[in-house]
Length: 393
Image 1 (cartoon, helix red, strand yellow):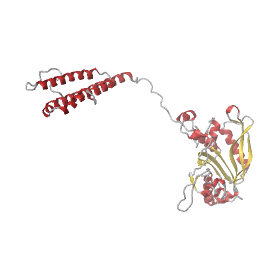
Image 2 (cartoon, rainbow, N blue to C red):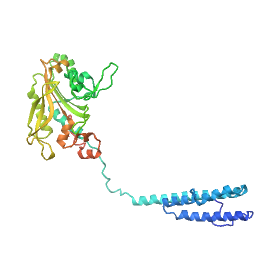
Image 3 (cartoon, rainbow, N blue to C red):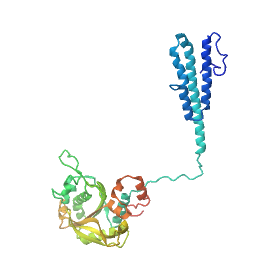
Image 4 (cartoon, rainbow, N blue to C red):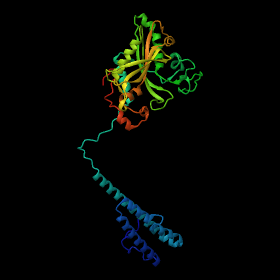
């Protein structure tokens, strides 16, 4: 701080000072009074910052005064240096004090303007939603659970045997090529695992488990059939409006004695009717080829494609829904089951694709875009998703 009385009166001057010293001290006192008036006149933080630059900036009045010390004699610097430094420190302190006052006033003003009426109800909080894929998967599981199917799961990374060989894929089948399948680097044994291209490897795992337990079941007079559905992620090198590199499938497998195509047809027609919530379902089965089923078929449903929508159970158009067939005898043998004793059927469909058809989503890729706006539009309330175990919401 400056000596007491420096800003307001000149009687503090020492009678032993020279006339030149008194002149400089008078100039310092006047400069202090002028700058103090500028600081107190600042009414905003921006205005105060402009005053700070005017006083203490590179070309500020006090800064320029301090630069004159270099041209003074040693004796003058000893007497005038402390006074100029004291003035600079005093100006800086006044600026900071004024800044604190302006910030406090600004805060008080904002608190007055932005006061909250605690008696009002709080604004609604944004809630998350169930992704359409998970909603559709739960709906499908619920329908099959009502028909006595259990849910089975398996790993995303599979062996070549489970994904291809056990399912009767020949060695040079196109699905084994790099342009269709994601292969992992070779392991220590020189084997290359794959990202499963379908959920069918879980069928192989289940049939192996049944084969291991079958002697015990027969000894106890119990021969329970296999009746499972297998939902999960699958991976293929596809990307367009109706295909994505990662997608979701749900497959079904039934193994029992005396199983035939009639059982398959009833199961799928019942599923489609309940899933699309309509009794007017007309289907047709077209011959097809899958390595793991024989005979194989693709199931179409009658629909109406007018007005840019697909309506199941109306119109005269046909839409392919899923692939299916009787489990190939080679697959049963590969899993240790005797095809002369056991028969079965299998089917598989895309979860994401059926969701697009039911809920009118224009592009399958949007399901994986992580766009919150899209999720807010197509997402489902967490309370609307059915319980897979009971089928009830």
